[in-house]
Length: 236
Length: 287
Ligand SMILES: Nc1ncnc2c1ncn2[C@@H]1O[C@H](COP(=O)(O)OP(=O)(O)O)[C@@H](O)[C@H]1O
Ligand SMILES: [Mg+2]
Image (cartoon, rainbow over the protein chains, first blue to last red):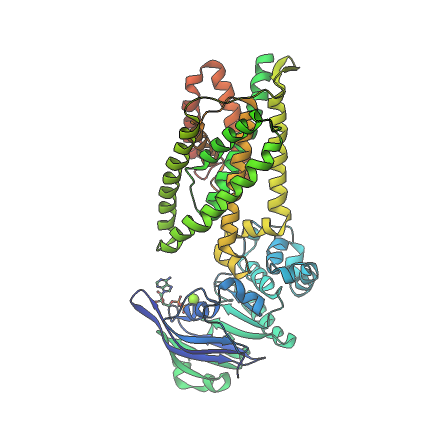
């Protein structure tokens, strides 16, 4: 059984159906990319996993446990870190405080100092600015802070929603490099992206979502040779 | 000279009380998006209850231990029931905000009338260090200085709570991004109820200070709500330091203007707000 299993999700906003019978899975240790254009339903799918959106039908399970009806505040303690679109750091809290919030559950709070030191090693940029308010950071730095905050809880699975969106090319490369390095720490990643090319370079497998339907799925090496993907997503 | 000192000292004293009330109001709005029109009624009920208790032989400082937890619990329960239901029924945040204000209007009528029913329009007061001292030529009644000291202790304690404790950080995080805070494991409903209760507690503390130095009636609630609203708009909606700064300003301006003409005080407040909002629409420390 896969680490994360999403089965036959149908989801509506009012009368409009945003997801149509979507199924996908992520195996332990994998990097899986969920690709698709703006409005395809990627964020909606992540939100059904984390309990922010209730699907009309379908099931989600994580490491054998059902996530159906589990509230969003319980997701982190189960071992899932969710980085929402735009990071959503706490603007009027310092970088250190933002990281502390990443270890908010009582079971993690006591060891937060060690966690922060670990994050400062992984993201030296943040260490230099530890007392600065998050609102003073650049877009790329905010995204790194959001990643570090998510990693504070020692997650087994990271859900990244559009990490690279709006970042300068140099930062995109840097952020993808860090995602790749998570694999060595045994962290599984579901990478939601519009940046098809770079995502496919680091992911093992990918799903392509179009208008709420899974249009394609498979190992990235196969998809990169797929003529439809080449034409529609890689501009070749 | 002594007049100026008098105005400044009394301005700071009133500023401390206003700061307390307004911190409560701005906390309830900043975290829960509830513009609590019944806020001053918590102050009124606490001021009157504390006076009654002192008359019955309880030490004034001991009434803090009684009124504050009571106000917290009432606020907490109101939020966990009425406001939570309202939140679930409202289709989005903006709808909730206007519904919540209407509900707090309802609570204002209920609480204000409970006060009127019990105490009518008679004022209550008691003697507690009610003799004057001279400071830089000005005559100040001692209980007001004690009140200022207590207000400062509450304000500092509240800042430490918000900035240094786990719960305080969760409260700040929730006010900055509710969704992200929930993702960090913060129980949003509980945190909002704690904030609403804490707002009530701060109003209750201000009420006891008013009972200690003045002669409250069951009608002082709305006046204080309006002052807190003015302070919060001045300081910046949702900003706790803004509430303290705004409270101080309103205290000083109020005392200065009432030296010339008491009836102009409210006019001065609104003038200040209009001018400030023209220069800084988000208030002194608002974002
Ligand atoms: N809160 C919402 N209310 C109504 N419609 C929404 C909401 N969020 C997203 N949608 C719609 O659902 C579809 C999928 O959106 P989304 O999941 O955000 O796509 P993506 O993340 O792939 O860009 C879009 O058509 C979008 O307009
Ligand atoms: Mg999206």
